[in-house]
Image (cartoon, rainbow, N blue to C red):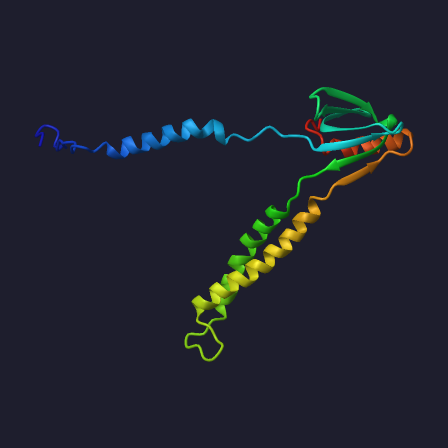
Length: 189
């Protein structure tokens, strides 16, 4: 004890920086993995364009500039510009969201089913009655499965392809088609 100041000097225990070393190791590992965790660049939807003269081509919709479609051709990797005035139909090819719907349905339905099953369980179950733990398991499996089925159906419906017809060449129809297609482009600006 230092008599002048009345403060006791503390010794640092040996090996006291192990926690600091572990935290630093975790921080460095996360910093090394961070570039891989960054969001991917947004892709435009793949489209199939049928021209009024019968030609057809497909590729990724990059942008809609005015009433022109800017498309990256999937086979040649070349840029194509097509005027909507010359286009008959555009089929927007969407990816299926079936499994995403199944997952979200189960994630939402299973806990709700477990809560309902646990709440309806009996302490002393008789014939064809369940304990709260058994009710929770049964509720999670049954309501989770039903919710997964409903989610899968909804996800499959959300992933259906869209067909956009550009039959007339009026300025308002072209502007409407361009606005609708802009939602599917990589550059939505």
